Amino acid sequence: MEFNTNNVKAGVAGAIGLLLIIVGANSFVIIDPGQVGLVENVGKINENSTITEGFHLKLPILSRVRVYSATVQKPQLKSAAATKDAQTVDAEVTVMYRLDTTKMVPIRRNLGDMPAIDAFVQQIAQEEFKKATAGFTAEELITRRGEVKTAFDAGLKDRLGTQHLVFVESAVIDLQFGKNFSEAIEAKQVAQQRAKQAEYESARAKAEATAEVERARGKAEAQRLLAETLNNNGGTLVLQKEWIEAWKAGGSQVPQVMVMGEGGNPFLLNLPPELVKKAQTKQ
Image (cartoon, rainbow, N blue to C red; front, side, top):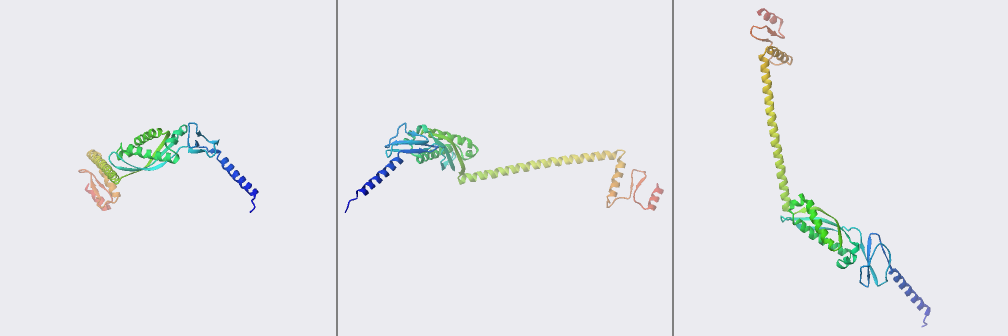
């Protein structure tokens, strides 16, 4: 079999070319905006290992760049805890934090990569949420929610700060309490509604009683004024006026003759002529 040196040379050249490509591709790294890199040389890092966004050269094969996010992270978790009065509470918790990019070496050594950091933050959030809720009753978690959040945030800030993580903000939403507390709250709301209804009915009864008294006073005053009017000289005219108005309205038993005062002239309305003449003759 004839040995072909040309084929050997071509194979060696191809291998060298492939090796150069691999080496070249591993000789630099590009850090995108919003990221920070940490260079490890043969598995070791030092205080000058942090690199920021842009193009960076590195040792091929021997160096590795760990990339971290420099933006605000927002891990979410569901947390279960107990209140001061032994009620259970569940909530959805979001913790916003960022890395102190000037401390990437200790962050790498103590916590690891980004998934490990997120897991650490979630663990701390669980512990601090339980600690915060334990200082308040279930009802206070609602009525004093601002104080609960303040206690929760303070614990997060201290705990994260020890690992060079900068606390930004937190959000606790969708509080869900146990069945016993929910039933107690419902019963309290029903009692409050009944109390308000009773208060309303009492106020209405007082108002109606006051109105009735005022109506009685008004009626008594009207009767007093009418009596005074009838007792005065103008009383006859008032009666005559009332009689005329009743007659005009078609009263069922309106008298046709009404004598006003003893020996006075009869006041006549709608009588037949012969009765009118007879009445005048009697006068």
